Structures are given as C-alpha cells and as structure tokens.
Length: 82
Image (cartoon, rainbow, N blue to C red):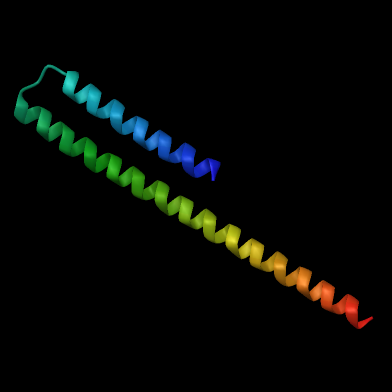
C-alpha cells in the first residue's frame, strides 16, 4: 500500500512539475500547447508503466498468500490425521 501511494505521489508530482515548467517557459502559445501535449503523453506512459508494475506486484503477492494458505491448510489437516 505504501509503495502505491509513493508511486502515485511521484507521478502526480512529476506531472505538476512538468506543467509548471512548460507554462513558465517563454514560448508561443502553439509551442506551449505542443509541449504540454508531448509531456502529457510522457506522463500517461509512465503512469501506465507504474500501474502495470503495481498490478504485477499485487498479483505476485496474491499468489504468495494463496500458496501460504494452502500450505497452512495442508499442514493443519496432516496434523489432525496423526
């Protein structure tokens, strides 16, 4: 949970920094809009990568928990049989 909050905070912070930097740059409106569009696409890609990483880690954690539960149940049932 902490990792996902940290990742979300990093993405949001990066997006805010990019927008602030682009808007503060001395460029024409057209150039600024193009820069914003390009930076938004970059942030979208990074966000998708972060989401995919979090999903992968969550799936790994779920698989690990399932395995541990199965082992615990097997251990408990084999202990009862003895």
